[in-house]
Amino acid sequence: MSAVLPSVPVAPGRLPVLGHLPALTRDPLQFLQSLRGHGELVAFHLGPRVIYLVNSPELIRQVLVTDAAKFQRGKVFRKARELLGDGLATADDPAHREQRRIVQPAFHRNRIAGYARIMRAEIDRIITAWPEGRRFRLDQQLADLTLGVTAKTLFHTEFSQAAVAEIQRSLAPVLNGVTSRALLPDFLEHLPIPANRRFDEALHRLTSIVDEAIAAYRQAGTDHGDLLSTLVAGEPLSDAEIRAQVLNLLMAGTETTATALSWLAYELTVHPEVAEAVRHELTTVLGNRPPTVAELPELSYVDRVITETLRLHSPVWLLMRTTVEPLRLGATELPAAAEVLVVPPTLHRDPALYPDPLRFHPDRWLHPEARTWRRERFFPFGGGPHHCVGDNFAWTEMTLAVAAIYRRWHLVLAPGARVREVTRAFLKPSALPVLATRVVTPQS
Image 1 (spheres, rainbow, N blue to C red):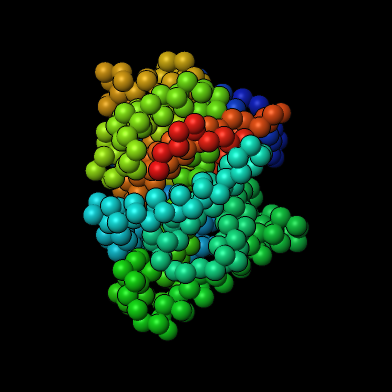
Image 2 (tube, rainbow, N blue to C red):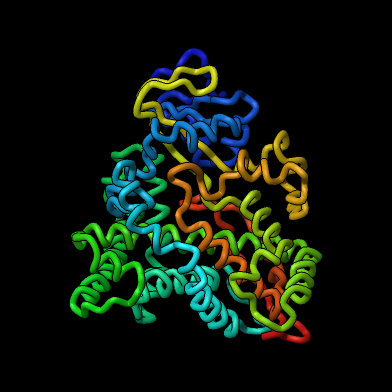
């Protein structure tokens, strides 16, 4: 579709042929944030494609929740399906409903308590090895942590260290490649350029490792009590179908949580008084004990810190949808096949919705209307039928990581470090080099 509906304002600065692609490529969030003042629905052009940016929380909720059945998941997910397979994170209905039914039991509340033991062990393994007083990349350490947690809790596969390293090396270029291929013209992905070669090589490495794990499970015939065992031994699924689920869960369960934890750590280096308040609550509530899952709700300040991190630095920064039938969105009648974009970070940084939105302020979530905010204007895990199936898993992992890290370590940014936002598959920090010193009276 190339013509904009007459009732919808068009973003300024459209160029011939390219449309708004240069502005979007140069600084995606700045460009998209600048459009919030133009209306609840604003059109912009990516070459000949028209994209409708949804700005109001009411219309976002309509897209994600109340009228979700009238949308498919958009080009990012279509491209992901082409490359990763039809898994839980990429599928549309009715396949999504069926796959969610298969995967959902792995994230039941009772399972989370068991996963927490593995989470604590993996967190301890990573943070115990940190070099005191020497510069290291905290974001890389947290990526290793979340990958280890995902592999050991969901798949229980005894990946070799080399395999884990290959997965870590391959995930980021695959995820970034999927996002860029969804936003750029299709013909570019077929050009023999270095970026395409790197993507193809990374995807091949990733799928090869997963295929080897599936083959090992089939040969052993052992039920490890994990998701991969369930997929292999349960309803008849092909290796390709199982591979798609594994890739989807690796994709969804590592980078998002690692990114959120990295931003949280960054904010606590910038705001040491918040880090001290976190440490005080941990000492007051837990004493010298590590938290159990049952005790996590008592860590109310840690909960607000995580919530504020996800508001200010929502890792999932693009949610694309495509209408499957004509529908009314606000004052506009959208036709079938209209492409719609939801951008959680720009919503979460709107001063009309969150006073002083660029300030990291965990206690804003003590506001009397905070419960309503969470329901109506807070979408870090998406919403509706495609709401992240692993949100409780991720929240538990983040809380346990914060509890372990800030009872043992003081973290400061390394001298000269400059942290900036990078808009790739997720909204990540460019790098997070830190120095760590042990808490004076370390608690185990």
